Length: 189
Image (tube, rainbow, N blue to C red; front, side, top):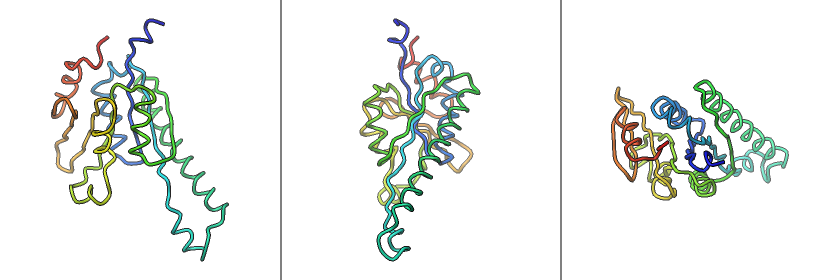
């Protein structure tokens, strides 16, 4: 019982993008020992769909069966993504808990962080520029400013280098990040 009280809680938020699965891979490779000693949550938010296109394609209100089918497929996709991520963790000897919720990803991630008392949130970034972020929004940017814990955003660049941000604490490049996380004492055994 005493051991569980000292266990840190880490959450990796994923979606169907390569960058989110890359963030999970990076975390397992670079923070593996610390993560294996922590309680790991893999989280997926199923965005709410705008069914206006279904209304237009059916010349009026979309059939309930069609909406249900779209929602069921979305849930199946989310569960498949979580199973894949859990398998990646298991291959590295890390036990992970999975969870999914329906709603705006940026809001649902921050709510889950608070609800579960997460101590480190890890997520990928699509690497959008300022203009794209202004129009499309940014889940990672929202989480950086609103999550109630430190946030690690892994950004893959199209160049040969990779940039990592440990927001709110420090900025590091490459393998230096793992050392910074350890120095900050987020994973003290």
